[in-house]
Length: 162
Image (cartoon, rainbow, N blue to C red; front, side, top):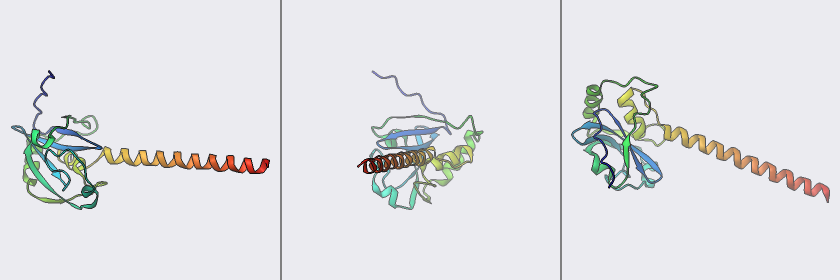
């Protein structure tokens, strides 16, 4: 039997491991989290949909962590505590609670659930998922260009020899 996951502290960032992406929430106490929920983020569903990429609105929700996580694994990940000073937990929770029920702008690249929780905890909106995806796409693009260039050079050399 697996050891139970320790109770997060108010203000902690919760990273939920969805298939193909990470969903983020902020723990506000008593088993509840506040998170930015685009249409695809149906509590407990655990599946991304094309709707997230197409929508520009999301709702700030307060729900039980176990309900939001569903069958997906999660953990506390205050990964920027070494770079940014976290706001006091009471302030983080207050700010999160004040936003519950509001409709907010949602963009995968600039205003997603990870930006939302980092803004609440640190006052700095950022998403490493977006940065990592852009870097990976750039590396893949450079790799494809290199393969294409090598292929063209080999083809040219072959024609010159004939």
